Image (tube, rainbow, N blue to C red; front, side, top):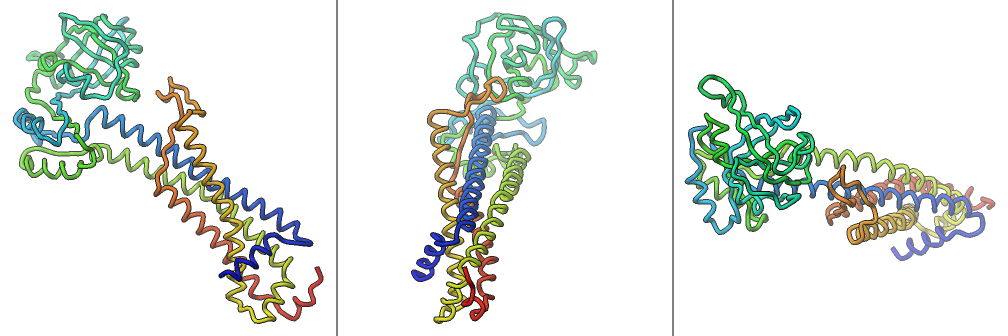
Length: 400
């Protein structure tokens, strides 16, 4: 191996007449560097947004959700059990239904009414309140900031909420309740800020006349690493009449879509390295042409075809490896600087964050490294075949 490495280095450093191969060699290094850099940065950005979305989903809905299999099942007994479990940090009973909100100037919006204990809103849900809010003797409602803008209302303003048609009164008319906006929250997720409102269980009972029982229990765990074990434990306890789902079960479609998107982006970015690998093939073929006399001498003194192949492969790994290492180093440096100093900003009114999130994992780095090694090996194998078909007698007469 030392022999092949020594010869490969001498070929790479070149000599008289090696200008073209040096130029294409630098282009190959830059191509590999750009491809590796682009793949790592793209994966880091996608990981950053994916992690943020998942954290927001869990922050708004909890780690595990327990729901009744049929509408006649009550959840209070299950709630009393889970809230006293040492592995469970918090639990929240809720009723949920889609209805209509009527604001100023007859502005109307459909929204999801979530009837919960408003006293535990601050501790259970990962949301920020724009201001301290106000106490009111009227029935209160807590809405998102985007919904408040669409309805043109602020804290202290009055709204009218309307029940869905399947929760109408005895005469078939929807139930209508006047409520006062007591607080406005900011969840930093469009669907939540624009379409979810919180009301008290009392207001929920008045609005949902035919929905007497709670819909479910949202659970937040002490340690999320035990998610699967706790789910199995809850299934054993409540398997006969309750449905137990983790946040992954509830959002399986979204998670699958994000994973497919990652694979698609990875496949597209592989084209950059593929183009760079073709250039690497050209570089190695040029080296073989320029060093054809030296290769013939090596063959004449007994160097086997396999060792000639290894020399070309080694040179390919030297050229490609330099580009890959530089690409990894530059991308990791950018990720570190971005996470520390936020040099790449984002418009907060669009993305709800002020800087580009970047998260890279060891698995991602290994995947990129394996892809890069594969293309370098592929290039080296193609070029090395050219070196093994050299005619020794003709090559020794080659004039540089």
